[in-house]
Length: 153
Image (cartoon, rainbow, N blue to C red):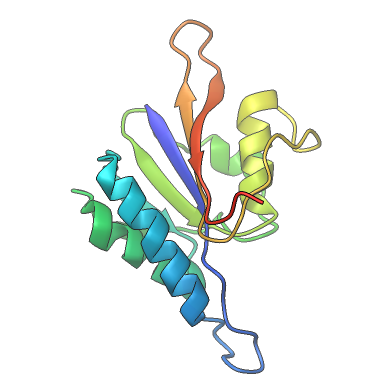
């Protein structure tokens, strides 16, 4: 099973959009990463987002490009300060799933899955960035398999 973890695209400031929807730059960067993922034929069964506008919009862009059979759904537990251990315990290990959320949650979830602790960061996310985690069949441990980020510097 593979997990695809995505930090939502860049959003508008709250004073311009109280719902903090995606900014034009966030839309463009997310579309760019989604198209690269499509080109690589990234196999996503479904996409789950936090329910916040910026995460939903990011999920919709990825869904348009990747056409997951299970569609898009909203789920609690992906907000910035939610408990990653609780969330990790609910991950279904039978399908390739994308989760779209927020910082610091996404970085903490990645650290927790790989090291067992949120205190040991293992990756710095970027808005619209995609991190692929794969379960090593021998050790049954999560590893970072690859990433796609809008910026390399």
